[in-house]
Structures are given as structure tokens and as C-alpha cells.
Length: 480
Image (cartoon, rainbow, N blue to C red; front, top):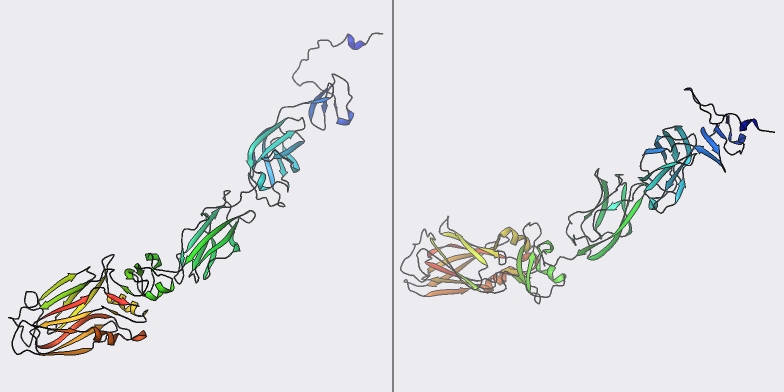
């Protein structure tokens, strides 16, 4: 008997505008008959049967996700919204790590054909970021966005592991800053020392300046050492650590930054070689270079001792002109000359504004840098000394001295011992009376707190000062 279907509806043409009304049913109601076309009320897609049921669908289009990053710590999950079009009634969301591992999104919710929400998984860590996001329609058609989901980067250090700054024991160090930031623009919440220790006498503090985390080391190092420590930076979720080394050293005068307060400080720092060293007495801001004798512990201004000669008188000449006298009542020193043998390491000036009380002040200089060492500097240096005096040899010459002359020596502590030098010349002659004041000065310098540094001399009058020649060995400050 013939089948009516074999004769009816062949090459059928459908007309109208409303469409073809397909038979509807659930997935369970399918009849596996080849060529059957139906509408699946569960998938909301048309489907047909060949060797198996195949849906008829347009692929989804994924255009963006939000948020594009979250802080993964192995337990905190994030809800991600996928936006696009053609999302089927049931969808699957996959997160794909850099190593290809697929993580199936949790709590998938189709809000509409253009919006789906889902939750990340706890297994999605920072090490496998950034993640691709893939949405799969029930038809199996899918759409992906690559490298769009960040699990939260670890903090990054901006400061090199080798700190170039060096702390000097006993001196407040210039604060050292160690900086870190988060590539995700997440705030750094803490930076702490997690191993090792900062230099003794120093401490660290953390702060966020709105752009990066700053760990500041400050204080006064109390011991020389190579200090190794580790700083760990955290953004509240992710951490990163870096090992640092900060050296602290004893000042030894080898540079201006390592200036020492006294010759004794150079000795205690183990300096045994001769050479220029930087000195900075307490309370002073200017460091000077003095020549340090490592074997004796003494310092002087110049490594090449010589003698400086000064001629002081009321006439021109070389100090042997005895033909003119300035009188007994009001001598004004008008001629000042300096004659130097060896390296000049000091200057000289006079003040005779209250004649005949003339003061002659020695201005010492830093031989290396040719900068004046003032009395305030010397006074501060004196406070660090055990023994010492300024000038190793001091001689006074006077031509044609009649009667007596009162001379005094100015010391850094303000004392002005007066001495009387007498001669019995009855008429001007071209002879020179010489007095060696080395022993006198040595007897005054004392020791310890009584140490005095010679800063000048003064003339306190006399019947005929004539002309003086001073000789001062310009090895300069001899202190220990």
C-alpha cells in the first residue's frame, strides 16, 4: 500500500509573513527521526535530527567584561559581568589561564541576551593571569576575549637591591627611601622588614604617598657593619619581597662625608697611613683637610713643613732699618710684609686701631682647598683634643729695641698671657734681639681641658717698637 506522504507536499512553497509554525517540545519529547525539524522549548532554539540533534543558532558576541581585575588570594571570589549579544538561554562561561587551564565559572546567570554574570573560582590565582574569558551558547557556539581578566599583580619594587647610600656611625644619616608600587594601581598597604635587621640605631617607617609605597630608613647608625635585610611589600592581598644591603662605616676622614672630629678619631678608626684627612669639629658645618700623620697621631696643615716670616714695622724695608722710630707714644704699624719659605699654609693680619696696642692674628688655611680655618673652627677642634698647640716653632726678632716691650699671646680659650722682653740698647743699631718662645708656648698649652691653641699675638707698647720679624713654622696646627 502506498504512503500518502510520498505523494503530498513535495516541493512545497510556504507563503505569508508570520512564519512556519514548527512543532514544539522539550528535550525529553524528541523523536529521533532523521529530517525532523522542531523547536526546543528548553533551549529556545530550533533543532533538527541527523545522526543526532543539532541546534540552529547564531554565535554569541562577547564585547566586554566588568570588572577587568580582582585581587585573588585563593578564597575571595569576584562576580564578573559579560556584555555582548546573542547569548542563549543557557550559557557556560570559561576562564582560561596563561597555561591553557580552563576554569568553569560559578553561579552563571543569564540576565538577558546581552548580559550574563558569573563568579570566578578560588583556584584562579595570580600566577596564571591574565585570563581569557569565553562564553559558550547551548548550541556550542562561542565567543572569547583574550587576556582581559587580571587576578591582581604583585607589588613591584622601584629601588635597587644595592643601596648606594652609606650610613656613618655617630652621624644622623640622610633618610633612605625604598619604593614599591602595584601595576594594577592598587595601593600598597604595608612595607615591613620580614628578615634580617636594619642598621643598629636606625628604624624604618612606611607611608603611601598616593602613588607608591615608601619605606624610609632614618636615624643615627651606632655600629659599623654590613646590614642585610628583606623588605616585604603588600597590597593587602599580594606580596613581594626584596633583599637589601646597607653598609654603615666608621668615619675615617677619607672623604668629606666621612669627616672626623679629631685626630684621635682617625686613630680609633684604624688610620695608620700619612695623608690628608677631612676634619669636622662638633658644632661646625665646614669640613677642612688637614695632614694626618698615621704613625704619631698628629695633624698639621701641610705635609711639607716650612717657615713663614712676617715683617711688621712703621717703615719700609726688610726689618733691619733702624734709622726711623715711630716714637714712644703712638706707634701705628703701617707696613706689613709676609715672607714664606716652604708651602704657605697660613695667612696673617694686623689690627692697630688702638695703637700702640697692635694685635697680630694668624689665619690658618686648609692647604688642600685653600680655605680659611677660622677661630670658631679651631675652638671647636680644641674641644676634641687631649694635647696640642698651633704652631710648632715661634720666634720673635726685634731690631733696635730700647727699654721694654710687653708682648702677649692670644689663645683659643681667650686668655692673653703678657710677657716682658727687655733690651738695653742705648742707641739705634742694626742688631736683632731674638727670643725663642717655643718653650713658653709649650708650657701654656697644658693638657686635656687646659689645652690652648695659639691664635695670635699682641704688642702692648714700649718705648720704641721699631720693627718686628715673626717666624712661625707653617706646619700649622700640631694637635693630637
